[in-house]
Image (tube, rainbow, N blue to C red; front, side, top):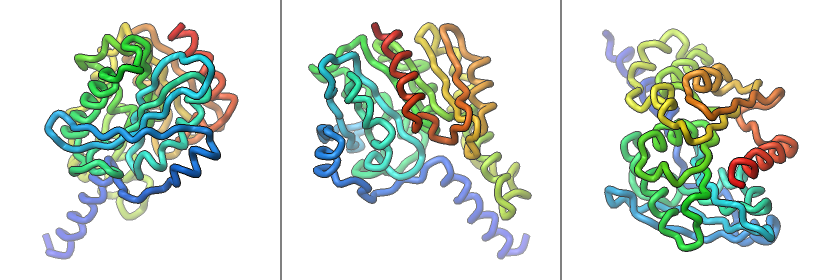
Length: 278
């Protein structure tokens, strides 16, 4: 193979790996302004992952009259918590504490993002959350979006902390990293011809489709936007079919990759959470 072709394939392989983790260190949020405008409190939480990597997150305490539970939120593959907090700011106003943190390599967290390490981070975050005196140990919700949904499934499936979680919510996630990567590659003319060989450069030993049956008997809610062009909604349908009871699947008409941006759907989700946690 000519050197130029080898270089081209190498660059495409790096881009393929970058579809799993796209961390940024940029701060996208003015916390003081957000506290004033959104009536929230941002508590910095610094903690160590199980291998000693320094991680950072935010704890957003409940702002309603009555506390209903605590949500641990696992964000998607790009940016960091300062951007993803926009997807959960409404939960503290409706009775839920929120713990959102950055995986290694993201935001103010140290290290470099890779699958084994990020799974360590998820378990470490569960440990830290359960150690808090203001956290009810049996009223926890695990909520993952996109990449975070995949991490939530494989992370909770055999977690030593799984007994503390009363609900798993997975929004717009996928059946396997390799399949998701191949489909994203197929959307671009430059990578279309290489979608299969390049997708095989992606590790697939953490496969949500093979782990999701282990979530039962924890209630599972799968959510997907019908118009999602990043991860097609058949992924959630297959995850639903493979999961054990109790389970539910919401296909949101007109929604894209962020299915909970609609206030009506947020109200629907709050009602569902309240019923599970009551």
